[in-house]
Amino acid sequence: METAAHDVVVVGAGCAGMRAAIEAVDAGADVGVVSKLHPTRSHSGAAEGGINAALGNAADDSPETHAFDTVKGSDYLGDQDAIEILANEAPGDIYQLEHWGCVFSRDEEGRLAQRPFGAAGSPRTVFSADITGHVLIHVLYEQLMKRQASGPLTVYEELFGWQLVEEDGRCVGVIAWDLVKGGLRLVTGSSIVLATGGMGRIYRATTNAYACNGDGMAMALRAGLPLKDMEFMQFHPTTLYPSGVLITEGCRGEGGFLLNATGERFMAHYAPNAMELASRDVVSRSETTEIEAGRGVSGSVLLDLRHLGPERILTRLPGSRELAMTFAGVDPIFDPIPVRPGAHYHMGGVATGNWGETELPGLYAAGEVACVSVHGANRLGGNSLMETITFGRRAGRAAAKAALARAGPPSVSDAPLADAERELGALLGRKDGERPWKIRDELGSSMLENFGVFRYPERMERQLELIQGLRERYEHVVVEDKGEVFNTDLTQAIELGYMLDLAWVMVQAGLAREESRGAHSRPSDFPERDDERFLKHSVSRWRDGGPELSSEEVRMTKWQPEVRSY
Ligand SMILES: Cc1cc2nc3c(=O)[nH]c(=O)nc-3n(C[C@H](O)[C@H](O)[C@H](O)COP(=O)(O)OP(=O)(O)OC[C@H]3O[C@@H](n4cnc5c(N)ncnc54)[C@H](O)[C@@H]3O)c2cc1C
Image (cartoon, rainbow, N blue to C red; front, side):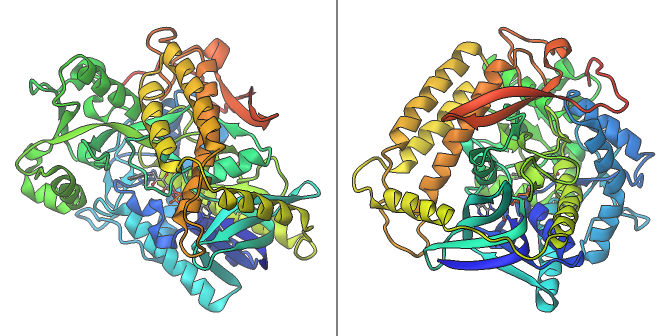
């Protein structure tokens, strides 16, 4: 087996992974970046609407207001010390990105423009038209390449991280499948940073790419680490019907209306002050209520941009117009766009402290894979890209510092490698059985049906049973492609195993949370938030072949829970 050793190994090369790697190199570490995709193909590149920082360019704003909006948006489940770090450090991080070359849109005076986003007390979202993620990911990649040309940095593109390696109570590496050449590879490091992104693909209707399967969360779970707040999946209110492609919140930020079948701006009934710019959980529930009450249009509601006029649509929202035309056959200059809620962002993840550190010495996590937790029960649009940058930077710095304080690369015994080879041999050696895709489809559809925007006890129970059935079928899954090169049959089978573990964890945590908070809504049995019993994080660990649930206090600094209305 080919091996490589570095001070710091970053698994994942989206915004969080690349930002962590850049910081670790700048701190003097030799860094290896392992990614199953070419870095610029990472899902961060799909981000559209923008990135939040209280610059105060469009109206009065402050990090304090940013922090409060985020705490309230999180339905008081976010850890307030982490949220304050995000809000305080975001402006400096934005200026640094700008100096590195991010071409952000400008206002008439030449300052960075800022647009309103849902549940934000001030226009706070910095943007590059509606291709912000594309701009960020290319600038970060440039910075990465610049360092690779001159420093100790190796990017292992198309290496699929499979298992974390632990030695003497420390995380010391990752075992990966080489997608290009085939075969297992071991990449060791004194510090490992997980930055593998989200897991929207666990749902059939999602804005997430095929790569977003929660790999890093499942790897950490299997290594015995706690996952936090796994029941909280955000459904974005405006995903195209029927494809699920995202139409950015920036459309509503620019003034778009949501209409039902009768042409009514129905948000007036649900969030009379914020209207279309209420928080995402509120808007998604309102849309679902309209659709279920028969006031939808073929399973969707309508996003109307026509009154913005062609010039604004063409300059501020060109990407959204193109998506609507390509995937729904609708030109928003002339017609409203059919939209509905779709699985978009997972608030939970690997539990970390404010420097990305996890419970396992040597292991760090940042970005959507992690739960630090700045989003609590509901993320505000624009905060996630900011989290990848601010906490990616912090995780990279801490990982480098810890690695450089150690005396050389860790030694790794042969046992984990031999186990991995055996496991792989068994999976590839199986001759008969079911192909993974059908199990994957059934998982995605049933999660949408039984663990979606609204959650009912009997449906959650049914979902748990279904997951057990799917897990039994997974035991006999067959990988028909036995080849070495780009064997996506193999990686999809592995990813399905990850998703089945995570689905179990999510639904178990959802059943136990007997309240409605943020994205977790139980209208039939527990319609209210219950701070007395549930102002706490869910913590899930894998024990004896299944998830075990406990809880942890929310870290509060200055904001006590209040009624959350918009
Ligand atoms: C369509 C869309 C639009 C969005 N728009 C916005 C927005 O406007 N503003 C905002 O704040 N947020 C937005 N978000 C959310 C935000 O973009 C993401 O949460 C964020 O970009 C995630 O970044 P990341 O670096 O954590 O993960 P990703 O960018 O998903 O990167 C994950 C990386 O991990 C690698 N990886 C995964 N598994 C493995 C493995 N097993 N082995 C090796 N490598 C692996 C991948 O190759 C990839 O490089 C949007 C999300 C979507 C889906």
